[in-house]
Structures are given as structure tokens and as C-alpha cells.
Length: 374
Image 1 (cartoon, rainbow, N blue to C red):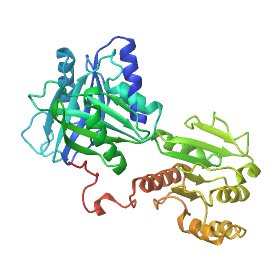
Image 2: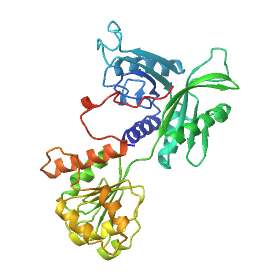
Image 3: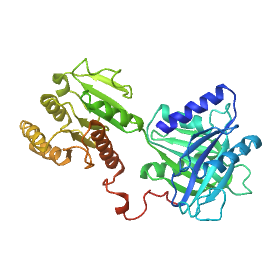
Image 4: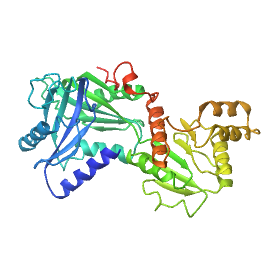
């Protein structure tokens, strides 16, 4: 969401100043590339850039082509083959060893369904959704245009091009159920179209129990990733918005109220209050929660004592909590300072969220990124 918010800010500034701009979107990748489908970059008519579509090798040429698309008032699809060491457009020689296709679109500020306005609709009501973008059409299909889109939310709300809504929405439902991006050729009344189906997910939700000084670098780092953060503590002098500007919410919750609170079942929970009674109350309220992650700062002995004190709870729930509790918390990075510990915690949560093990990438078999299914 952080990248999207930067794009929205730049877009709104350009719109207010009536400065034409275009959106460059990665729609298809074959092989290896720095960015995946869905990466975006805003380009103004005088060449200012917001966002990125590569590690820097494609931006220069894409900027010139985007400015041309603004002048011509028509979208364009450009293909970069970084396997071609003789291609002067990226100057990387062998490069990333992949083919990247970029859709360049002038943005119509008056169109409520231009690409960024559709994305804003998702950001304002962030629930899982799929954005289907047409980037190639049959030359004879005059009714189907490159750049037409359909956004399908988890609630079934469809927004976008009416002509293509039915066939694209059907494909989007399957993509949403599988949570896997796809590149599809879809038959429509306007002829066959090739579309990129991008899965849009809301920001990761993080609840931090404890508002001490070591919570600040954790919240700051998580905030830089665009996570939705709630800080919970019973101490009014520490649990303040001024101390945690990146948090969406800072709540003062005494230990007695915490014991009976209903935790966010979708959030990742981190316990670092340095208060034994507060950590125990947090574990009690999380005991039967389906939360995907529960982490506890401190030594193994502390975790063992806390779990042993849950003796009035069903033994089965306690054993389940014991098996899924991350304590000591974080990846083994050799962390010592609060900032280093925050990095280890955030890295472990990111790995858990992505279904990865947190090992060095060189030890990973297969591709680094999950490719879109074609």
C-alpha cells in the first residue's frame, strides 16, 4: 500500500495542476525480472517519475515512450527483452534474463474508471480483490481496447468496463479463489483479449502489545512497509500517537480489560510489553484465536513459564499455542540493538506471511518469484 499511496499523492498533485501524466504498468513477465506484474510508475509530460517498473534499467526508455503516449493520447504496449545483450534500450547486457511487457496509458482525469481511480477504490475499501487489465486484443476486435479493466472485490462488486465485465469478472472470480495471478486469453463479445489478472490484498495487520522504546523501531519499520499497525498498552504515558506516528491506532488497554478483549483474528500479534502479567493476559486472549502469527519477546524460560500458567485453560488449546508460538521471536540474524531486533521480527513475519522459510535465497530451489500462471 505504501507504493500505491505514493502514486495517489503524485497523481492528485498532477491532476490539481492540470499536468498530463501516464501510468506505466508491468503486465507480463517471462523469465526473470526485478519487478513483477502489477508494478507501476507514474510519468508526467515533462518526465518526472513516481514509482518503479524495474531496478532502474527500463525506466529511461519507458519514460520517453510514456511521454509519447501522452502526446498521442493512446495507450501503448512495449516489450523489453533483457536477454538480448545487443538491445541498447536498457544497457544491461544480459540483464535479468527475462521478457517484460509494459502497458503505457495516458490518464484521463475526468474518467472515474481510469487505472488509478479504480485502484483508489480498492485502497479505500481494502478487501481481497482481483484487477483484470486488457493489454492485448485481436486486431479485428474493434470494440475491445487495450487498457480496459475490471475490478472484482471479494464481496462480488464489479467495477470497470461494462463491455468486458462479464467474461473478465468470471476469470477474476477463479483467480480470487486461488489467490494466484494469471495471464489469460479470454473470449469476449468484442473478440479475444489477453489480460493480466492481478491479486490485490489489503495490508498486513499487526498488533503490538507494549509501547516501550523498543516498540518504536518495530512500528517504524513495519509502517515503512505499509502495514496496518495497532499498538496496545496499559500505560497512558507511553501509549500515545505522538510516540507511534506510523500506527493506525494506539489504544490504552489495562491488563484486566486485555484479558477479556477479542483479538483481531486476521492480525499478526507481537508481545513485547516487558511486563509478565501483561504478556500473560495477551496470551490468554489469543489462546483460541486463529491469528496467523503470535510472537513473544524474551527467553524460552519465560515463554515456558507463561504457558504453564495457562493451567485453567483447556490443555489442547495450550498445546496448540505452544506449537505455534514464536519465542524467542524473530529470525536468527544476530540481532542485538532494538533496531536489529525489529528487523528480525519483521523479517520473520514477512516470511510467515509469504509462506517462506526465511532462508538465504541462494538456497532456494526454483524461481525467486511465483510466476503468474498463463
